[in-house]
Image (tube, rainbow, N blue to C red; front, side):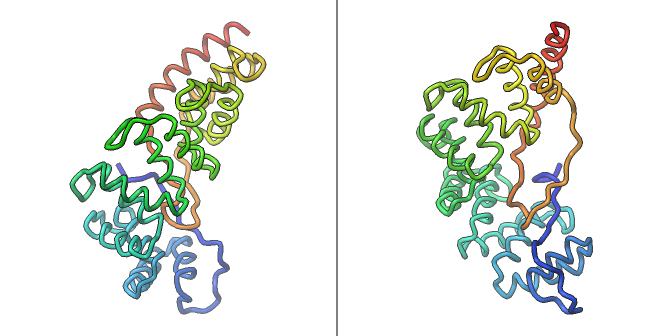
Length: 270
C-alpha cells in the first residue's frame, strides 16, 4: 500500500515551446504529460542546485515509490533540505514520517515539533494533525477546545479532515458549545467532497431533524452515498503532496456498513 493516495503532479504554468527545460515549472509540465524519467532527471538536478520545490518533489516521489524506488532515507534527505528552507509541505511530511515511524524511530513529540513549524506557516494539514493530537492527548495535554481551534483554522482553508472533525465536535459539543447548525454546515462541506464519515452523520442528522428540518429524502440520499463504494479518484495537485487525504480506510469501512443498514431502514419508511 502506498504511503499516500494516488497522485498526479500538475502545474498552472503554460508549457514552454523551448526544447530545453525552463526550470521547475517546465519539469512539472513534462511530468504531468507522463514523461516521468525526463521530468525526474530535471527535478533531481534542480534539487541539487537548491530548488526548494524540486527537493520537496524528490522527497515525496521517494516516499510514494511509484515513479522512483521507494526509499525512506532518500525521502527524508530531500525533505529535510526543503524543510531547512522553511517549506511547510516538507515539514508536514517529515512530521508524518516521525508519526508513523517511517524511515525513522517513531516519535510523536518530534512529529509535533515539525507540524508546529508547518502549521505556523499556515499549512492546513499540519494544523489538522495538531488538532487531532490535542484531542487524543498524544504527547500533549488533552484539550478539546484547543483541538477545535486548530481544526477551525484548517477547515477554513478547506482541509477535509478538519471539516469532518469540526463538524463532529459541534455535533457532540466537544471543545465547543453544541451547535447542530454549525455541525450541518461543516459536515455538509466534507460530505460533498465524498467523506463517508460526514455523509453518514449528516444523513442521521437530517433523519432526526437536527440542525435542519427533518428530511427523510435527503437523509436517505446521504446514507446511500455513504454506503456505496466509490472508485479511487486521481487528485490533481499544483505541487506533489499538498492536498493528500488522511487515510481513514478502516473507519470508512465501518461507516459504510452502518450506512447500508440505515439506508435500507429509512428507505422502507418512505
